[in-house]
Length: 470
Image 1 (cartoon, one colour):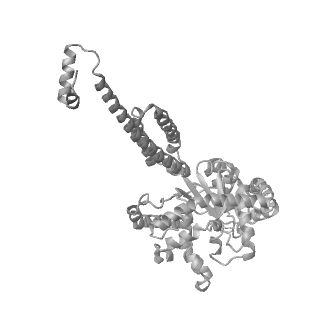
Image 2 (cartoon, helix red, strand yellow; image 1 turned 90 degrees about the vertical axis):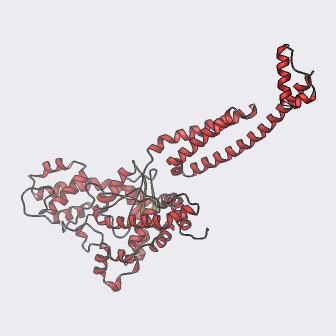
Image 3 (cartoon, helix red, strand yellow; image 1 turned 30 degrees about the vertical axis):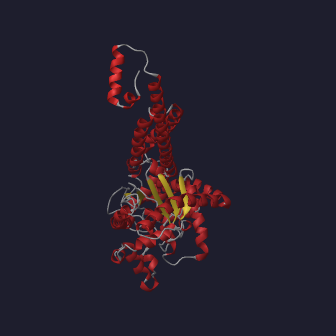
């Protein structure tokens, strides 16, 4: 029989084992077995307590990661988030899969399988995350063919490929003198035209700029890093201030590009559809994004922010054709709402006889035939481009069809094409405007969705710039 000293002394215990092996004794002494059983049970209880604690901690961490991911799809689909979840899950799963007692193995497997499946399910979208596009049109004046062919018509294609936000930029409408009585009506009319032209509110967010207050707040924050000399050199500011006179120009016209930058950066936009005349404004937007990231991004990261990139730096999205529809009275000037003569543009809501009269009286030249891309024939290029975009045909097809036409014949063809194309839009517009409650609901829903993203961006900027948390 083994003594108590042998049981407590490892060397003696080994010696006892070796002796028992030689004589092929049966099981060790019952006292030895009882002691070992107690120790094992104590170790099991201790391991079970530690494993339970780790399980609860792991569950809490993973639940938090998934809750943040589900609340922010862009976080879920980011590469860092996917790698974080998967690496942690693998470590945690290996650690606990064979160590947890039987009562907890099922729970461990449940969390592991559910979360891995969520992560795996997000792998496919993460490789094809939709880029975000924002754009808008002022509600001043009437929406004309230039707005439609240069912007709104392209939105119909963009909404199928990108995450899109299309808004009515009513704050920009007051940079110059405006009609107070007509602003609200024009705003709703512009929204109705968006939808009548084919903007699908189930795919795109349609809202009013002033209904998301973060636009103005971010503009003020951006103005603190905007050089005044840069604004003074903006081409549109020079042109409009020269036309209106210095005494009639307010600060809003000068800071117009900063508000435009706010419109874009607020939604972390990837792409911005712009015409050639707006490229300078987008360049300023990119400069401001890079400036804020450089000045405040690194400080924000040191303070515990999510990184040094506060704003995405957007890229221009310039359509290959129709980005700049020219005036009917001057092939070298852009079709514009602000042009004094209504004869210079085709409004989307113009009646048939008005469209026919404007095309009949539009400026042409005396050269035979019609052709694209001749610098000496800007009117020919403009009208052929309009016909190409309205008819949906290729440039080569239109050139071949119209190369031998005279102006009288072509104007008739163009008039018929315009009337046929705009008539369904006008019918749909009247239907939407007759249901004011529906239109208000669409705008409210769009503003709510936009505000979620805008407020998140704005709060990040406030924190990065050192403001006290609200």
